[in-house]
Image (cartoon, rainbow, N blue to C red; front, side, top):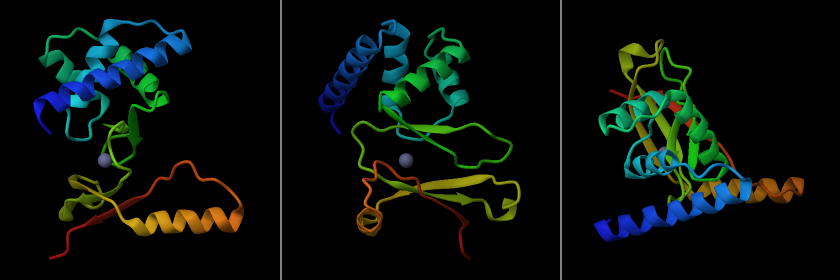
Length: 159
Ligand SMILES: [Zn+2]
């Protein structure tokens, strides 16, 4: 993605946030836009602590409470997705930007010698068209419209 494309994307999601905040009657504070921009500059999944550190490094003064609160707003606005990767010692959720992304699922690979304490080695994103097929047959079988799904595979690398 070239820089201009990236700038366009960031200005587009800022507009999405602006409209959302107006519709909900939430305050239009500048730190919400700074946090959103940092998230959209990220390539990886992140948790609240990662984002908090990143904001500190960039000399933005936002509290963790503000970050938590802002992430809830972004989730509701459809700007990010929330995940549970079951990492060791961590009940914290992971997040990722979602507005321009294709739907994908996650394969969480733990370090082999640490299966019990769940030390994550790698998270692979995949997109398998068969999942769309499953969704369609479930919709037909139960007469429902499925809006979203959640699928995680957890494992270790084979020798
Ligand atoms: Zn992902």
